[in-house]
Image 1 (spheres, rainbow, N blue to C red):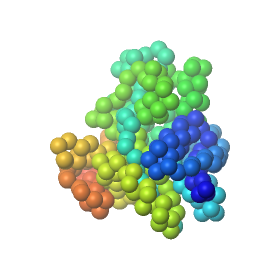
Image 2: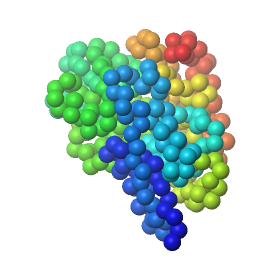
Image 3: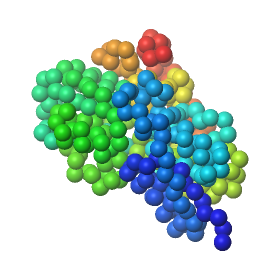
Amino acid sequence: MAAPTIIATRESRLALWQAEHVRDALTERFGLQVELLGMTTRGDQILDRALSKVGGKGLFVKELETALEEGHAHLAVHSLKDVPMDLPPGFVLAAIWEREDPRDAFVSNRYAGLAELPQGAVVGTSSLRRVVQLLGVRPDLQIEPLRGNLDTRLRKLDEGGFDAIVLAAAGLKRLKLASRIRATFDPSEMIPAAGQGALGIEVREDAQALRALLAQTIHQPTFLAAHAERAVSRSLGGSCSMPLAAHGVWQGGVLTLAAALGDAVDPRRPLLHAQVSGTPADEAAARALGNLAAEQLRAAGAAGYLTAAA
């Protein structure tokens, strides 16, 4: 009997759902015996500080990469929006799977939407991207940091610490918590994060046979859109301390990529916007489209905003 394929995963309920989803699909499609290796990452342990202050979203993937490097696991499953734009040497994204709903969700026990919030309402999120876009619409809001896994964030809302919180719709839907969503933000009013709603599968670069197998599972529209989105951030030196949004939408074979950049130091500063369209057929063309959006942001004055985020 062949040795099992091991998936390294965080141990939050959402991360385990994602890993189990990949496990079941690989078993059904390829007949693989797949097991999970649950791990706790630094990102899960540090809950009293913003990610931008303690090392960024890479804190959610480092321990998983160590498991891959040391041979304890063969692949790691991530929410793609949590994956740094540049992976460490020796690692690659072998596959990107089809998105769930990419939008941000408004969650509240008292109010049906952002417009219903009273003056000075307290909204929870630790995403700088969400902060600058929320304040762009409602500069009166009091935005407070909110860390922890999905269940922890909902509990903090239920305990009365916030009038509303903003979460990724995808996670709520995957955990059958869609009933908690009071409203979703149209991407035209709150642009999602690069890769939001998609799953990324990371492996060692030298795992050629596994890479070839996983390549068969790539969802090409999501793959190309996500690479375009991630290229915007990469081109601008993107990190967790940069309030950057990038989201691509396919329509009739054309990918339209919208991006927005805010100021991390002065989140009420007007957002910079970019929008480009193209018909990328491969990863290189998708990245080129993302680079073009980044150039538009630079032309709009991104340099001053990036200096603030540095």
